[in-house]
Image (cartoon, rainbow, N blue to C red; front, side):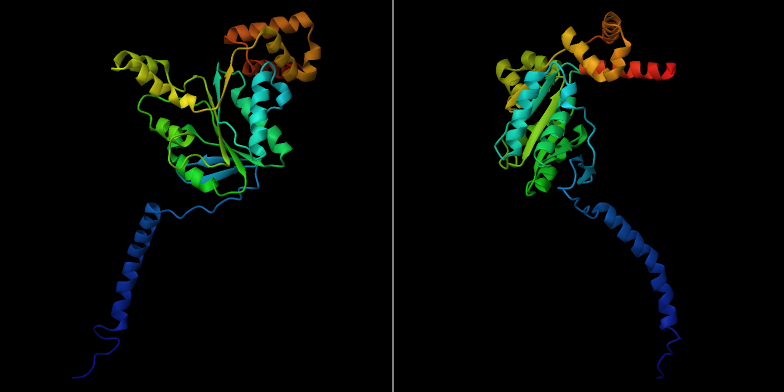
Length: 300
């Protein structure tokens, strides 16, 4: 029996179209596998930048080359909070065991501004020893991945959770609690937490009241709910500014523009601005200064 020709049935010219048909299918399978298990992002240099943003779902630390902050001198009327936070951060930067920090109180009173300004001051003092890492509210449950990523790095990290609070049944509550105290792994020695919140216990008042009214042992249920706040060794309260402190903030933010006002006129306009917004605070002072600057530019 004669052998079949390479170009005949079963030859190379018949097999080639079959392989070509399989190529698009294999490519689609490869793309699908990549989506199921994405390649791990290349690690960024965790010594190169003053700050990072944690993208938890992607498992990435995004560099922030310049952190937006105000100078410490512009934060008036919160000297005790400023002194305590700086002392805690200085100890942390020097290698001491420091307390996790909860900054709570009225909106716009300088909680976030102090966190960023204090970090900037200590970052300069220690030649970049401490990096600021912003962790968004939506990524709290990915904290174990972040801690694993930075625990072995020869640098200190201040994890910043801004305007944080929890609702009933929120999974992030337990994740935060385990990191602060209670998990078998604990918090790495090179990591410190700074949390700002409008709520002293990080929980809505309704949640606490519901526990008190419905629990068999109300005091124990409430104690369990507020125990997260107790895990912060340093708790700093912030309140609306007194008039003199508010006016000092206004003048500080106005700078040379303050010279364009008579003293009585400046007081009257600044107070009217605060009254319309319902509070005297650093945020309101900044907004008033921006309003005056825009008005001056428009008149020029």
